[in-house]
Image 1 (cartoon, protein in one colour):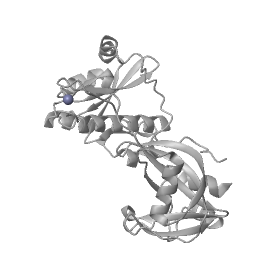
Image 2: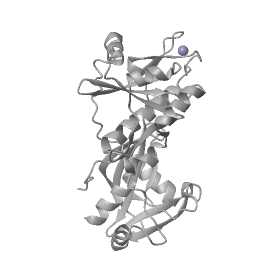
Image 3: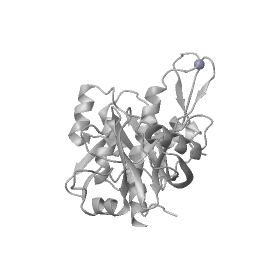
Image 4: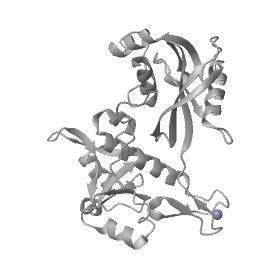
Length: 310
Ligand SMILES: [Zn+2]
């Protein structure tokens, strides 16, 4: 049975989400007012990254409450991320910040894409960024009630929005995606997605689960739709939150029952079988050849490597 040898990106958050406490507005307000509270600003879903040359390098822009107070930011969605010890961490959407506040923030660091920053940060920091980005994005998309169209309001530290008109409640969503390495003995199937553009990256197949499907059924359906391969046994590998915008990648291995590839031509523009030795060489030489593998932040890379090393 394969399993990841190291924590996957966006997993292993150091924070206690304190789900039992965050529903108490008085407790939450006291934690937010506390002098040791930390706030991570995000602008257009990009977190603040501090490039601190005096330490080991970039780190996430967790600002103390006094600094945030001085910036005089407008009211924006704020989300409770959790506790580290007793210290509360929050994420704040500063997209609507006026010029002066935005300039002050940019003197502290840069707003950068969470994925591009991942290689430079610790696993705990990356997990925190992922949670913050997915939550702030959900608030931006759920400003209005899906039932009646009224503006919604945030509650429970940002983990619920409710409609003051019809009473509907809205909860942060996570979209399950199956991502699978199809194997046939010593070969595995990799494909090029049209999203990769001119990058010659070959990766695992993946697709959104549909209502009424099991994980195994979704794996078999997606593999057949995208590559025309019939699969039998499906085994679970690991899962990875993927905040682009709010997916949960469910990594699996699927055993092929057929060999003939028929790509869908829409999402998948090329697919072929790779021998285990070929994959090992690609990983060992840092994929300097014509064909590349997915980045190490992605669970796809770990599915491929764990299989190749077995
Ligand atoms: Zn409503």
